[in-house]
Structures are given as C-alpha cells and as structure tokens.
Image (cartoon, rainbow, N blue to C red; front, top):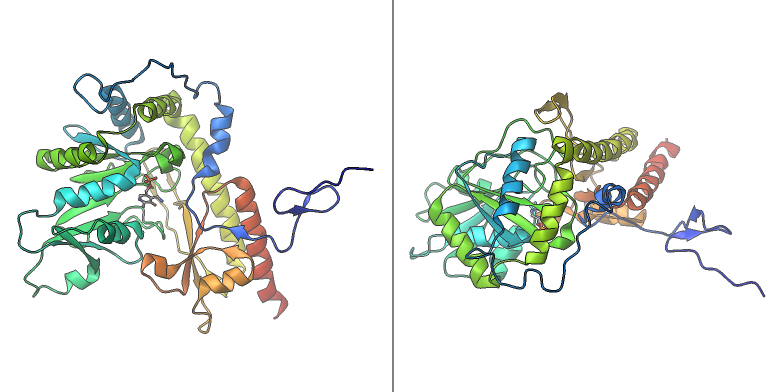
Amino acid sequence: GRPVCECYACYTGTDCSQISSNCVADANSGDPIFLEPFWMQHATNSAILVSGWHRMSYRYGDLYMSTELENYIRNMHAVVGNAITEDRYIVFGVGSSQLLSAAVYALSSQNSSSPSNVVASIPFYSIYKTQTVFFDSKSFQFGGDTNKWQSNNSTNNMDVVEFVTSPNNPDGELKKSVLGGKTIYDHAYYWPHFTPIPAPSDHDLMIFTLSKLTGHAGARFGWAVIKDKDVYLKMLAYIIVADLGISKDTQLRVLKLLKVALEDDGKPFFKFAYNKMKDRWDTLTSVFSKSTRFSIQHIHPLRCNFFNVTRLPSPAYAWVKCEREEEEDCAAVLQAANIKGRSGSVFSAKDRYVRLSLIKSQDDFELLVQRLTELVSLENDSI
Ligand code: PMP
C-alpha cells in the first residue's frame, strides 16, 4: 500500500501546507536564529576548517586571548560607532553571561565589612539576580530595584553595583545609569539591528555578546571593554581561574564570522539584520494597531549614525501589556490563544506584561503573527 506520511511539527493537511490549529507559537526564548539566512547565504566564506594539530596550547604565546580577534572587535566598534575602545582593555568570556558575573566580582568591594548590593531597574533581565544569588559571596548580594536605592539615602551601606541594560531586555529602552556610581553597561543589543546608534558608548565597563551581534549564541562568546586597569585585571583573573581562558576554536570561529560581518564596512550584514527586524516590527505594529485589549511599547525615532538616517528602533522583544483590568496574568491570556511568551514577573515586573521574542526563525515569527492576528480579530468580532 501507499506509505503513510506524517507532517512535520505544526503542519497538517494532505500536502502538509496548513498550520494545525492547536500548534503553539513559541516566542519565549531569545534564541537569535533570525540571522541564520544571512549565514546560509555566506556559507562558504564564513566556514572554518581546523586541522587536528592546530591550536593545541592553552595559550597564544603568553596570552589566553587572541590579539588578532581583539583588533577585529575594536574595528567592529569603530565601523559601527557604538563604543569607544581606544585606550581600553578587552576581556573575552564564555558568552557575555560569564562576564556579567566577572564584572560583579571585579566591582564589588572585597575588603569591605558589608557586601556590595547588585541592583537593576525593573523590568530587568533575570540573570543579573539569578547569578548574584547563585554565586553567593561575602562580597556581594542582590539589592533589588534601583529606585529603592535612589530614595534610600539614609542607608549606611551605599556600596552599590548597578546593571544598566541598554537597549533594555525586555522593553528595548536605551537606558542610562540611575545612581551614577559603579555601573555595568550590558550592551548586548546595542547594534543597528535593534536600535539607532546615536553615539558611541563611552562607559567604564561595557559588555557585548556575539549572540546578539551575529546570532551565534552557540559559540558562547562575549567581551568586555574596560577603562580601569584594576577592574580589567580582576575580570581577567576571574576568567582564568574559572576556565583557564576561553576556547581557541571559538576564538577562531568568531574571527572568521567578524571578517564576513565586516565586509564592505559592515553594510551588507547590518542592512540584512536591520531590514529583517524592521519588517518584523512593521508587521507587529500593524497587528497591535487593531487592538485595544493589548498594547506594545512605544518606540521613538532617533538619529542613527551608522545608517546616517533618523529611524525607529526595532527591538529584539515586544513588551506586551494586557489593558483589560481583569486580565492580570497576560501570559495566561496569550497561552490560551496558543502563544507562549515570558511573564513580566520573570523581569521583576507585573504579570500584566509579557515578553515576546522577535528574533527567532522566520517560521516561528510567522506563526506568532498568525496567532496574534487571530487573537486580535476576536476583539473586533465581538463589537
Ligand atoms: N545580556 C542580555 C541583556 C541578554 O539578553 C543576554 C541573552 N539573552 C545576555 C546578556 C547573555 O547572552 P550570552 O551569554 O549568550 O552572551
């Protein structure tokens, strides 16, 4: 008899071209697969081949980190105009995740009798809290929301390390330090795909990641740009003690990827990335414009010195708010419509908010749009 075929994943129908009605649009994770088509178009010149004898040592001469890669990173920042790297130190980490905790270690006062307080402004990326609690130390503790520290001048322990995520995860805002003391700038999303670049960032400690630049989250590569030598040495010590430095295979791959991303002064790569995010924002904005039940964050145009235009941001995430008073658990409302997002409480905000990832694959995004369109059309049917 004829073989019985099953459709792949969410598809159904005799030729598997329809999306099954119970299929969930998963917009939970920030996995940056949206750039996969670019790398497919550049499959050959972005590939690496590593011989068995190559890079067997722990080090490059005396160093754990490739000077050539460091130069490419400085060049990338110069081309994009998003950070000052002259007279700064650079440290590599296993993803920027490792550098976040290295930075907390480096900035907290080790000889103080009371621990430094690690703070961030709500809504904030949850790993700052998770890591600070998990790597429990005599030197630091999690101090919660920045606002609490602003109004609390009377506390005798004012030793604070502030995380500033700019653009912010989850809402895409270009944030600035609230307390103006010791600060860690997490610039994971400070690239033209997600935001206009109004000026190069010039802060004492800035952290970037390959994950949200080229989309290679699996390579686990991030870097910190550091002004102060003592802070640099402490962060370097952290990475060496934790791992004896990071993988040489990864450094080689990153070098190759950055070379391709930097071709023609980065124009083909950043145009591809920005156009993809802009298209997604145009689609999303149009869906939410028909809704009064749900809203997304407002975005405002700014001058982008990389593209030389005034343009809107195109953030990695939609920060959705359920407007109906009784709909306090927005993730549950979306889940009932087969949309999976991340609850506001994960970002220490209200569950009236939910984050939807816009940086997954095209299939994921299209399914998300289909589910959102169905949900919003219900509102208009009932009028
Ligand atoms: N910072 C922010 C704001 C992020 O959103 C992420 C990843 N989602 C990271 C840091 C960590 O990324 P990675 O460890 O892959 O560099």
